[in-house]
Structure formats: structure tokens, C-alpha cells
Image (cartoon, rainbow over the protein chains, first blue to last red):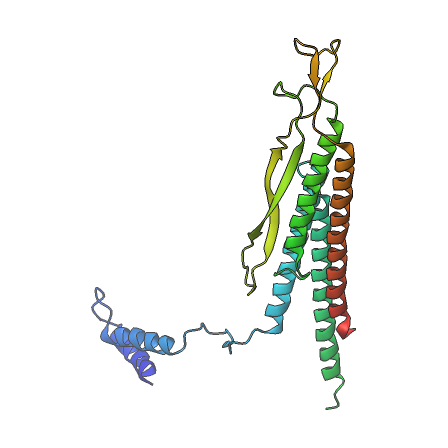
Length: 124
Length: 139
């Protein structure tokens, strides 16, 4: 491996080397490290993504959606209560939307938990 | 997240519009005997006109047509002119112009508006039921 040998070269070269310019072995080492990194774009420790959304993506998407709808429903109700808007049906419909989205999220969670429990019940 | 209950934006528009119509009807009935309007003339009956408009697609392939109020205009027909010389708003000859509001017509409009509001509300209820039934497939 070229950069390992260049590291060995550095330990020879650093003593008494010209300090204004990095030694040639250090330069080689840097170039080899960059070439290695270019091959693998993700940082060390990251799992390579296959492209399909994972369960955590789906769940966090649902939670964000429910949160958004809940905020809209709260805003509409606030407008009714403060007198800014006279459209009562708007806040009721927004409340229903939030409720349906929440039920959807709960159903998805139930299915995931059921699947997990099914897996755990398998005999090894 | 996309709207889970189908057709809600359109129905909300329709409910808004029927509310505006009810507002105008209540204004007409309240001013059925008003001989002087804010602008000095006798009160003229107001009527609303609705128009459809294309809603933003939002990812749906068939953009829906919502409804909105196009205009709130005066009914130009002149009202009854009666002879009442003692009336505070009588002109030089003692004639008073009454508003052209017919109570029976306003009541019929009110029934129409109320039924239209109910119809849209039942659309909301049914659409919500459909969504909840779809979610109960997995139960």
C-alpha cells in the first residue's frame, strides 16, 4: 500500500528535512489519502445508502406531516377564537385532517410493531 | 403531507361562499324597509354571483375547480314609490322610495343557501368516513 510505505518514508525524512516545504513522502501520502477518499464518498462510520427509504424515514415523514397538520388546525382555531376569521367550518375541517393523519401514523406504527414481534417470535 | 380527506379544498370553498350568501341575505332582510342607505340613496337589494376557478395542481393529475365570489352587486330594479308626505325621508312631492327587497324571495334564497351548506357538510362527513374506513383495513 503506497501510503503506508510513504509513512515509513516520512519518519526517516522528518529528521533534518527542509521544514519550509513538506517532504515528498508526506505529499505522496496526502495525494494517496485523497485518492482513497474519492473512491468512497461517504465519511467513515456512515452506512452506505441503498436508495430505498428506510422505516425511520417513513416514520419521521409521517410525524412531520402530522405536526404540520396539527399546527394548521391550531392556527385556524386561534383565528376563530380571536375573531380574525368567521369561517367555522375551516377549523373543523382542519381538525378532521389532523385527526385522520394521526390515525394513519398510528396504524403504520402498529403494523411495524406487529412485524417486529412476528420476527422476534421466530425460533432460532 | 398531501390532504388525506379527498376534495376538502373545494368543499371548504363552497362553505365559505354559502356563508357569504347568507351574510348578504341577512343584510337584505335587515334593510328591507331602509329608506336611506349609507351613500344617501334608498337601500338597493344586493345579490351575489359565484364563479369557478382552477385550483393549483399540488401533484394531483386532475386540477379541481373551486368556487369563489365573483361579485356582490346591487339589483338595479327600482323599488316601490309611495306617497307619504309625513315621512322624514320624503322628497318635495311627499313621495318615498322603498327598497326593492321582497321578503318572500329572500326567504327562498335563504332556504337554497341553507340546503347547499348542508349538502357540502354531508360531503365533508362522507369523505372523512371514506378515509377512516380505508385506515381501518389493517385493523
